[in-house]
Length: 274
Image (cartoon, rainbow, N blue to C red):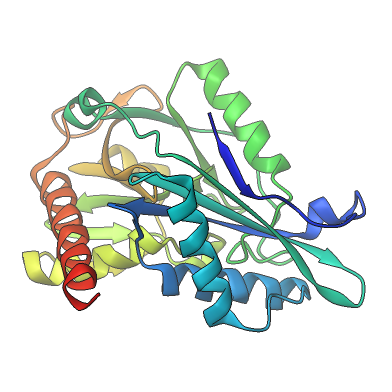
């Protein structure tokens, strides 16, 4: 059951639910992973939407950490939403709940996805780099995925380039390199996605941003998704087509190990420095 630690304070107009912004963070061992990066994205979303975020970012970060501590959870998801109020700072709502992650079997076999006809707002109208609360496109895409009997839905832009899923970034491995769609196509730059650029250097696997078509996906050696909850998970079927040998590939597995190693290292650094 979710634990509502910091409920929304004060009356907020109903229409504010559509133009608020939010952020989802992962806690490992009682510590929020990459808290500063998540807050940077949250405050960037608020600035884009014209929402007044809490003025003292350091105090707000401490408030989030305190909410996690008071929840008593070590492995958790921390969700914060900023709802705009006329002439005032946004009203924050903080929810801490147990982290529900894919089962180990999903990492062994990979997941199935489909490119769906549902669309988000175009990058020309509302830039998806802001994590805003209006999620109708994602809701419709999830419905499309359920109708197709797959685990996740992939969005395309108006020109036919694949961008991201409803809650994850996407990438492939082709000719020994990692390829992931660029943010200017209209996608949210994930915190886990950013970590991959760090991990790929240590693994000596080249990584670059590039627009991807369905043709690229179907002919990829590997495919994967990244997100706060999934970390790095293999994609083994797309639109009913087997990707590679139908199992999570070696680069995907190495990226997952590298990510989890980095999490352990950062946890150790925080604990050692108090």
